[in-house]
Image 1 (cartoon, rainbow, N blue to C red):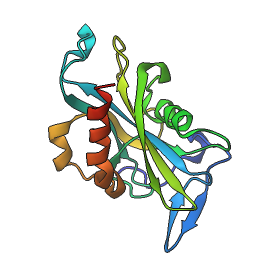
Image 2 (spheres, rainbow, N blue to C red; image 1 turned 180 degrees about the vertical axis):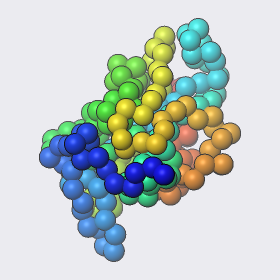
Image 3 (spheres, helix red, strand yellow; image 1 turned 60 degrees about the horizontal axis):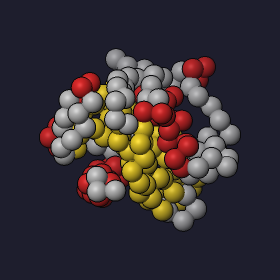
Image 4 (cartoon, one colour; image 1 turned 120 degrees about the vertical axis):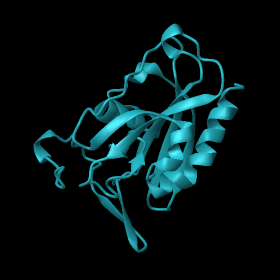
Length: 178
């Protein structure tokens, strides 16, 4: 059975780590949080073919000890003091999913605003010619991988991610025209 508690000596710690109380619930990230939804299109990425509709996104199967563990969402976490959402999402995706920031072309952002706390999903696509092979790079993940859009309905998605998914995919569709 997987460990239900975090191995504290191997987690990435920074000054933004901590809980914020928001009404009757709490959120991780003293300065808010951010994550990266990275997509690739239906072509053959290794051949540099990036045409077609979005076919896959990178998702993280969250460690059981994490908040809402066992669900699937985007790699992400607490923002450091003064860190932008884009910088934080790219840092977190490197730490958790081994995604190099230079492999990501940012298309847009989607903000879940709870007043004293917010979560920004940074939406991006793989830079043409880049090869991204996501992997669980720290103990915060059970697994990190490319997930086909037609697989999403069969996964237990993190509820706020599931609610935002139509808007996130629309950002990708809109980003194709720019």
